[in-house]
Amino acid sequence: MSDPNTPETSEVREIRINPIVPSESVLVATARSLRPKKAEELAPRDTRKHVETCPFCRGNEHKTPPLILSWPPEGDWQIRMVENLYPVLGDDREQPGFNFGLQQTIDGYGRHEVIIDHHEHGIAVHDMAESHLAALFGVYQTRMRQLFESDDRLKYVLVFKNFGPAAGASIPHTHSQVIAMPVVPENVDAEVKNSAAHFAKHHHCIFCALIDEALTFEATIYDRNSGAVRRKINVGQYVVERGEKFIAIKPFASRYEWEVHILPLVHQADFLDVRGEDMADLARVMKRTMARLDAVIGGAQYNFFLHSVPHGGSDSTHGVPPDRARGEYAASYHWHLEICPRTSIPTGFELGSGLFVNTINPEQAAERLRAVTL
Image (cartoon, rainbow, N blue to C red; front, side, top):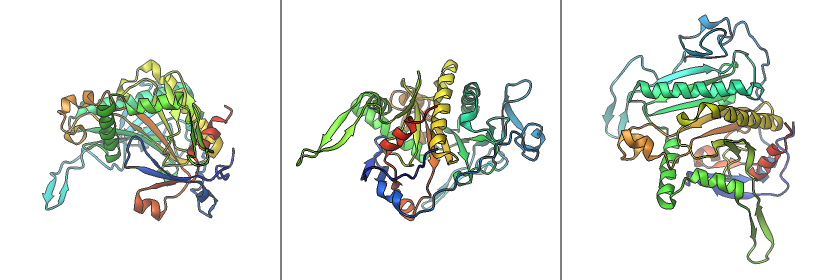
């Protein structure tokens, strides 16, 4: 494992604008990596296959809330889904919202569920078989579809994974979560709104354009006064991993030092439209990307989450009738998986300004991830 805190070869200090959400900026300041700081502690790897007291381990099914689904449906389960014991949203009671002056609420209706990713207690994502990861993505898709079909009030379903206490994980057994909600999250809504505006102006998907740039674009930028080379942008310098159907890219405006996004190479707005036979390639790209991250920053705590097109509702459609909303954004939005390792603690500047500070040059981070031998 290489040292993720190795100083950069050249100092970079610049504000980068997120092309998807221009209001979101990232300050890349590599000199900050030299300052004394307390990094997020590496999450201890509990590599045990079975823990007698763990409610998520096989044989302890009676210790979890009711079963929602399992895979395979017969025999010993490999993946298991249950209700969350401490849900942030629920359908167990309904209470009316209210408006009082500038204050307003809506009912906290929804679903909050846990997917036990694997029967082995401490297995890491990059150690799971590709076939198992493909099945896990299939479970994500199945449950998302079931939730959307179960209630028209649900406008968004978010699938995410927390690993490590600093990333929000409270149980060490590998697991993901699903939250179905009556509102579209603000960050997803911003992606949808801005990508739709870009499409209206340029008539193509901005995510597809970024993939094309990553695979085909190169340029040399010179200083206008001295003629010295200021920067070279090389073909593929943001690409971390590529499969037949999917690609892993280091964002140009990375909020986190080792942030990586996985996207389908061919335009697709909705994760529900991924074909079953394509899940294997998604699993391969995910496994190899996580293996590269582990080789460089092994033991890091992380979050990953799936952003897909919303399924109707006035909060997500911006005036488009709900039954047309998904189709309205089919051409402009592009689903993706965001992987965000937590290798530093946000500072008061970041929390107060909303400006992320990245102390590692994204181009060099991508190069180090690509250099890992798998």
